[in-house]
Image (cartoon, rainbow, N blue to C red; front, side, top):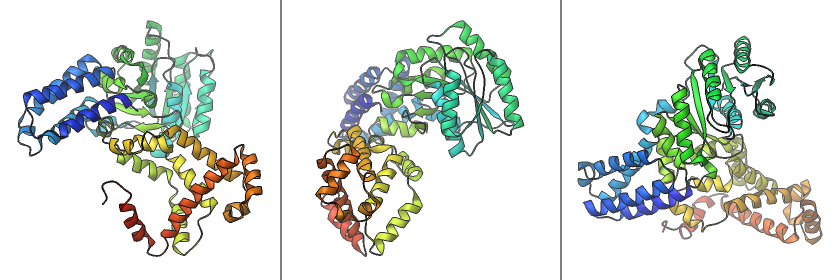
Length: 455
């Protein structure tokens, strides 16, 4: 996510931290690098100018001059102003969805065609059900795009949300009002209305969505924008903001954009908070947007809090406790346990997602490893274990040459892949043995010699 910008700014941050004192000259040099990094990332010029001016004012002020470590203080200024650029100055409440109306709370989704609006409706429905415990109804008022209604029905079914049917022969306002009536009668907490997009901004589209807004009076009107649009995202955001009383922004495809300028520009142009970011194609790939934590990630400081949250959501606490108890009393770590650990990793979004949230230094320590390939390897190992019999999973020592050939054939891999997977399992098994009794402290002491900075 935002790889190019992160690399450039992380380099600048490292240089800043090394400065014993700040002068007009070295501050100007650093700000020039920051400016270039932002412009290369497709950040809108007005946003860049405001950001640089604000950082310069604070960098040469008493806040930094009086600091014992001016370089580090300047890093703090850059971080705070970057967070403010993305909406931190609006306060934490601004990024929250509002439900302060008689149910159902109506959320109107607006945006161009192809930005991932319909998929985002499904992701948002899933988020509201799981995180906010809301009963959600979705409806499509897109009567133009072929299969748009069927797509929303399919997505809603996948996330377990209720769906209100419509046809391409109905009028968008009539569809929305019928869905609202249904939501009231069936006690839904939230109604999400998917609207038609176009390949470009036109008067007919704007008039239609304005009519929908007038008929529904939604509490939230969210503008869905593709982070990969770059400067075009800014023009589109301005047009929608002029036509509709937007309450927030949803950035999609943030995982696919190495530049990510839209993430920094759209809030500045519209004055509206970014409320959500789409970080993967999966239906659970929607994150509540936190400007401060996003600023940390862009500056290469990582987002450990997000990683902890992913762990909390993905880890089966009972399974983890059962495994810990099993190891503690001398039980054997087998291939069923190993497969369970692989599954937990996948629930956390895979290796690539986990690495993205780590500080830049730890990402570099990964040695440029191909994380997408690592995720494929995890899936392959699961396939190999699935090809084993229950007895083989419980007693891996039974797996000799003949069994390996059968397992490899069943999983569609070479025998070498089976050997590699078993070797990794044995490493994990060996580590688990060390956790028995008072082995945890011994293992931590041995790890100190392996981990940089722990000696």
